[in-house]
Amino acid sequence: MEASSPAGLDVTDVAARARATDEIKHVGLSGGALVVGVTAASAFNEFVPPGHRPTDFLPGAESVVVAGSPGPANAAWRSPNRRVMEIAGYDFRENVASIVMAEHIEATYGYRAIQGPTLPTSGQHPPLSMMLAAVLAGLGTRSIAANIVLNPTYGLLYYAAAVTTMPLEPDHVLEENVCPARSCVRLYEQEGRTPCMAVCPADEGGCIDATIEDGRIVHSYFNRERCSTRAMNFGIRGHIKQLEILMDTDDADERHDLVYSDDFRRNLAAIGRYKESVAQCFECMRVCPVGRYRRKLK
Ligand code: SF4
Ligand code: SF4
Image 1 (cartoon, rainbow, N blue to C red):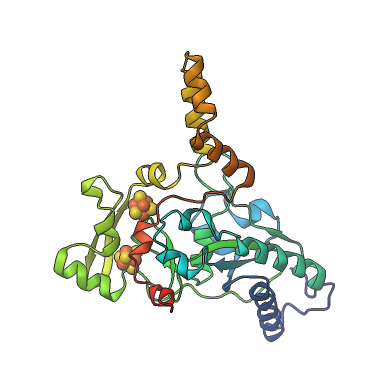
Image 2 (image 1 turned 135 degrees about the horizontal axis):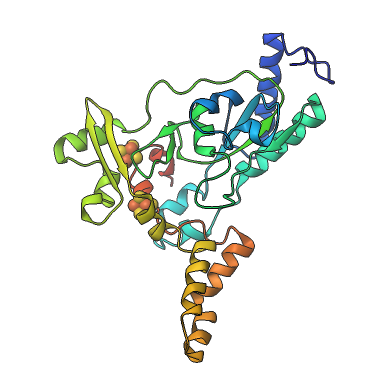
């Protein structure tokens, strides 16, 4: 590790490092993030294999700065048209904030910084897990509902990160699990299910199950494959499914109808514009109490 950056920051000075960390967080918040946290790059090593660690993408990486932002506006959750949640408000401010912070680190402090790579190049696993990054940066903990990371104040957020060779002051993993919320524990004790388990029960064709003892999750189950067929039908996976159907269809009229169908168009639009359709199911999050009071507006 170099003792001082080109911008003159003495990285062995804890107070100076903390000031620089706060300044970079402020840049992220001004850049559109709702929350920003920091983790040491090495913290990933305990949880993910080689190939999925920050140093695999930026040799010498020291820190990961994580930005979280909500998707649609709070009122969108209450829209009588369920599709509003699917197609409106995904401006991915967390991505903008992360690249703004990366550029700021390079321009101001002279350290290398990249946007953390998140889009899977094969299969469903991202190169670098933003869920893990968010947990390590103290921004939330995993929940029973689809393993989604819940922020204690805001609930569901979307995460992106800047990976940098700059040593920063890391935040701490949250000491208390956000999930299950107290009201969920009470409901579980009365009815054997939390709200998310009730809307998507694994034993009735859904995706979620869990056992809670003394207010803590002792076992949880999430059927990701089943969930993805309900929640992620548009985009590249839906397009591949339709191509398979096309290849197996001999009838020219049927092929024509499929190519000009609404679903086919939406798949292509989702791929081309990426943000047209993020997901089609938010039911487990719709009933989750964490952060829900913020959606109660006039
Ligand atoms: S997103 Fe929908 S299908 Fe997936 S776990 Fe939540 S409620 Fe179930
Ligand atoms: S509804 Fe309750 S149990 Fe389910 S994810 Fe939210 S806090 Fe956790």
